[in-house]
Length: 171
Image 1 (cartoon, rainbow, N blue to C red):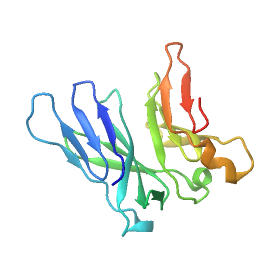
Image 2: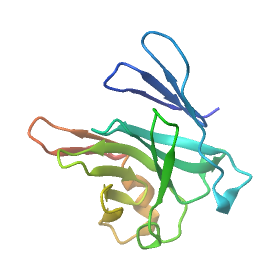
Image 3: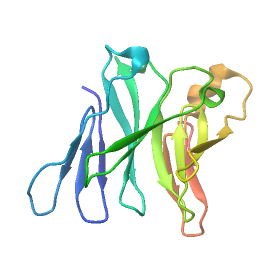
């Protein structure tokens, strides 16, 4: 089995994700579910949810990719999921960022301006939900063999407003 993602939203709902996103509300009640559709480039491989974050509009942003045996098989897809209606919209990272290489969104954080910061296997990426634009802050090393060591695994905002980034080698 693959590890999943746990996330608590501002209402105290716990979201549990691996291949399916499920909500466990603080008072019980119905369970909300979202299953990402198969990704066309790897339709037979299971899609895994790799990152989760809530925005100010209470939408959940869901990072996904197709995995098999702990290895990413596709470029990742970012979904905006509405827990109230069950509707979702997909946003695909441009080939100019992914270089048509398989990878994953490892972390999602929201800044004070409503933009999402994505920790990915391609580097740090900012996404503007209003325009749909992705802006890469790529790996700075020219040797692509070292990129797995530069994967952005987790992100956190400091009290000073700076974004802290974790890579396998540390902060």
